[in-house]
Amino acid sequence: MENRFEWSALVLRVVIGLTFVIHGIDKFQMGLENVAGFFGTMGLPAFLAYLVAFLEVVGGVALIVGLGTRVFSAALAVIMIGAIVKVKLAAGFMGGENGAGYEFDLALLAMLIALSISGSSKFGLDSILFGKRAVE
Image (cartoon, rainbow, N blue to C red; front, side):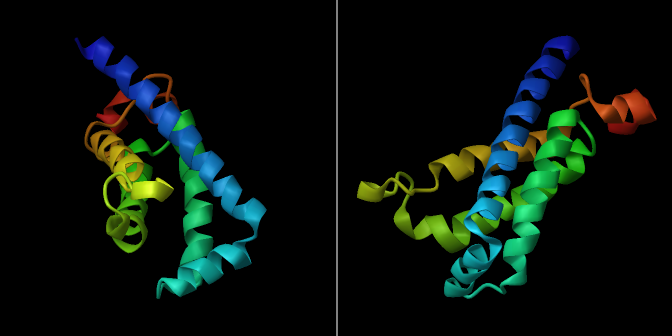
């Protein structure tokens, strides 16, 4: 059973990591000043846009390679909570006509919480660098 758990955690870790890397790179490509402006319209400090974009890319890569899975999953979960509360919650679960609801964010949040609780050591740098006990 433990082996099946590790394989499923690996799939979650890699897919979530890839998702965050792509979203983070997208923020850089659209211009962090634009993202900072958007954050400002929501009453958030502009520096958070830079922090979020950086954490999405670095945290996403870390998840893909299995480095600090629990820590980065928890940090990205905080970002998802912020996105749901500040941006998506008012639109509703499905988002109505524009489709910008919080269902996708909530699914990512659930997966991130699962990874922050369980970790994932299969093919992860944590287990290679620090041994399996470091990620259990």
